[in-house]
Image (cartoon, rainbow, N blue to C red):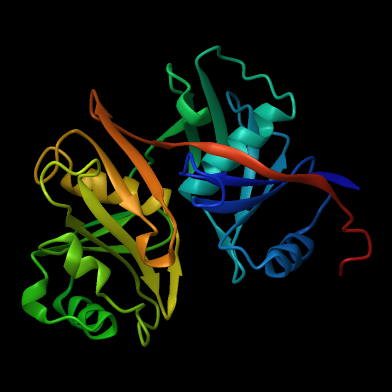
Length: 279
């Protein structure tokens, strides 16, 4: 039996963020067992906490979707750091937690105000950036049910999952997008400004092949690396999940060239999981 937590990430309000399933002390589980449990939870991501293998790391994290493993993902990073701390984990540094994952070492900090248990990760480098191919933009536009002239700008903002970013003229256009039926291998993040004076600067959605992720740290990290300081201010709050009746709030801060992506974390389920006999 292993300890288990389900953590809601990116909302201070109960059940309005994005949940992640976290299995503690996962050393000894093999790839097939992890993948099987991730399929069973049927959440966007399930994570497994293991002993670190790299110097400087406090723990190692493996991240699985229902379809396979990811090198990095944002809300699983914050939710897993929360679970690790809550279970008694003690980071080597007083002001930061260092996570080892497929993307390398990722630093997670605890915000000084501690609002809502807020944690923030330092965005890893983009694996793919720059202007998007017109064929990919056209496929995304068709899948979203948009017109080509609805797209203000497009770029790769891929830090692991494969995100293609589309800047749209406003939040209203973002909210009328479809969910990407027919995208094939594309994972598309759309972003558009909210009205002036709103608590959030932008509305964000993450869609791929008919599925929508409620609140997405990796996408917001990539969008910030693309747009913050150019189209968006260096510090802002993004809203995500509105179309799914969630209330995700993603806090972005660019400090000395590092993009920090943060949000509230809250444990909603604690217990144990028995994976003995899982093939």
